[in-house]
Image (cartoon, rainbow, N blue to C red):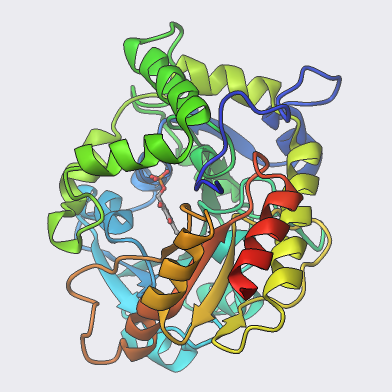
Length: 371
Ligand SMILES: Cc1ncc(COP(=O)(O)O)c(C=O)c1O
């Protein structure tokens, strides 16, 4: 079975010298200030708080999970969605048309662990209009592109540890610009808990059950599921409020013990293995043919002609962790001007590449897919 997330029992957690997320960030972003949080959205809220005034607006890509703009609403800011191209680059004409005197920031998103195409042009645009550039790097905590740690482009950024490690929560806020450093005032939600909580124990137990029961666990989970995958059941505001807690002690411990280089190498190998096993399929197109040095892929994204059929085929071959991405915010889905984001949200299927998967499992799934 190929699951969506790694297990807390993975071997890629080690205590070898120089390991740990701190050491990795210190090595790749020595001049950046950073703070741990329970969630990227809360990190974003705290990072922006000293830089903005209620009534201002922030531009974000339309191709985005629904709860990501909640921190802006929390700060009294208006989120404005800009259209994107098929390559996931901003549609710059659309983006620029939405900027006005009250635009305080523009956010880019490094999808699936790769830098968003057009980052340089976006940086010069934010300079020209004198607004902040937020680098949303939720997907790629240890991705480094051309020597820059993703999440540290722009004035401030953040990353989500849950997308990399077998942890219940966790994020890092990066403060790059002097102004972002100077105005930062951590709320009580900054930092990590100093004790193991009941939720930590529950996470480990669940992880153990998942490891032991495999596919059976997945079917029990879906039987008990309250419909979280059903778009109508997603309440972005409630999701955001639920993440307002410091990072758990369990995440702090795993973050400290993780070996980023080993994890990145394993994810890259799995990415390449998917590339090989899916190369001949005519019903899908790969998003990124190249896997540049330094990139730690979050998932292996493809565009499928019929995403339901492809997902069903994957499921039959034991790949239970694949899914379409993302569920769009209601105001964006099928709305005028957001055709590309809407189409991509229906066609993009992401396959897991996490470090808990052996490349041979992907090869086996690939062979079954061909039959
Ligand atoms: C692109 C993107 N940005 C931000 C977030 C929010 O991160 P967090 O869940 O850590 O708040 C997500 C979460 O799924 C995301 O996909």
